Length: 328
Image (tube, rainbow, N blue to C red; front, side):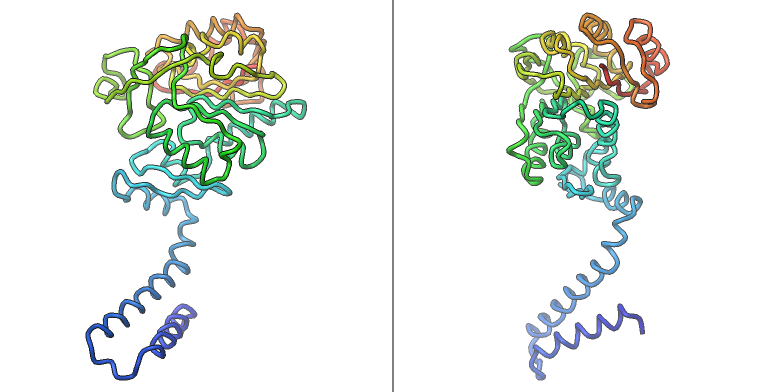
């Protein structure tokens, strides 16, 4: 007899000892069956289900078969996140594969070296907290400012900050960033990828059915207004705004003049659609930055010039490929 069967029989015997020998009513019979079923379910969960959930394929199956619009708990190493089962982007990644995006931050911290004191992380396009929450909870950064315009993502971001007990170390802003203060911008929402919500600048159909997306209006201020104090020796700007980065950097002249390390998503398709590649180059080349790393291959340091940025753009093309750049 297997250990699982022996444990099951032992639990049943212990449960039956609590029941009078003369069980004649349906109510008591139902209670016995209910108690036994709870024991069986608990035993199966502890001995079979939990070990299986260590496998990514099983977690993926569970996530993909969860009813739509259900909140799911994603356990990622030392952090826990609440995600939506509708989110096939960051939510699914966290639930099925863990903190894959966070590895990029670890690479950046390594490249910055020991002289960078890691005081403040400015997480622009923070989504539900997959970067800023582990960065602070693990002590990699002392504090963070998280900026997220979508109200639903912001609610999950706030929840994840709270349940990971870093509320005192992360300041949140439910707004967008742009080239001017006090703007109202149209924000388009992806139905299936909550990391691909974007500022709308065009109405034509694109690769991701942007023309049929629902929209809402979001408030926008400049980075210089929202984060007026940045120290280049201890502040890192982390920006993932789906092609709108150039317009945000236009409103960050004071911040860029201090030359804090800057990570940007570099997505030619999104930049072309948002009309932001020209403003991005202008903002970077007018600031005192000198070099960059392509984080898809962080072994080579490039000089920051028109030609090197154009070369990365051309290599990725406008078909949807992207990378992240660390600007120094």
